[in-house]
Image (tube, rainbow over all chains, first blue to last red):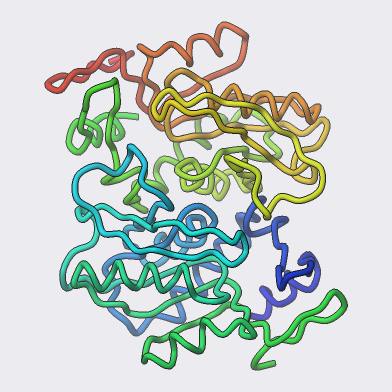
Length: 191
Length: 191
């Protein structure tokens, strides 16, 4: 998505530790016009697929998942990052390690909201090591549902998570895929 | 909003401690068609007002704020619940006590995303004691911005936060306002 690359070049900030800050339009402030376009693009990429539901993870995946869900016309379920009073009863859970924050957490979703046989599109803002997405894929598998694929706003290819998931036969689409980056230069995959 | 009342009556579950579970359509699974209607309703309620930006709080406020932001055509900023690596540099911060979880946390937003003189609509899923909304109002005040008002999906009037904020001259709108509730009966304010 050309416009995502342009946004990253115009507003993104690369800081140490392989982190790209896109708080001005994606994960603290949200440009709602641009968000609609992201939703349309994800709907377009997966237009040939039957999708029953979108699964994402709080917090910054929610806006993108909602934009895609509005376009595709399906509900969005968001996994929570730790067990709270809002998830009662039985739930699916998977452990995730965050390299960015160097901490472990669980991703949790009530069994009421993922069902056997459902075709699930997984959506998130970033794909780096793939830890969070692998947690979501585990929840889908635990439910006996089927992953249609993954759609992320930004893939950091050099952290390997996307290609590892593709290697297991799961479709992964990124609106922008970054092959390498430094404070001065960002190189995208496929143009 | 009649349809919100109907949704609550059809799908909401009242549990002990004054908690209403609406996970099936609002804060774990999101009905995206209904979400669009909520966004339109909030835009309609505040149609006479100049709004520069919407402020909400992660995680379950985000979807409603995004739906309203898409309708009104303004950006959404979401405050984070604790200091993470995604907020660097200077920020506004306010302390909040959660009665639901009996814990204290900070709401934090980068100074880059709230500016002096901006007219801010505050959006969240629930309004109970008003702790979270008072935290957001404090961030708006710290920035020298102006609160246009508050819009929430569900107000639990019996917990007093909404009327307390109205008493300070700030407009508060709820898509459904619950006067009282028990396992058997939910009574709405104004019909």
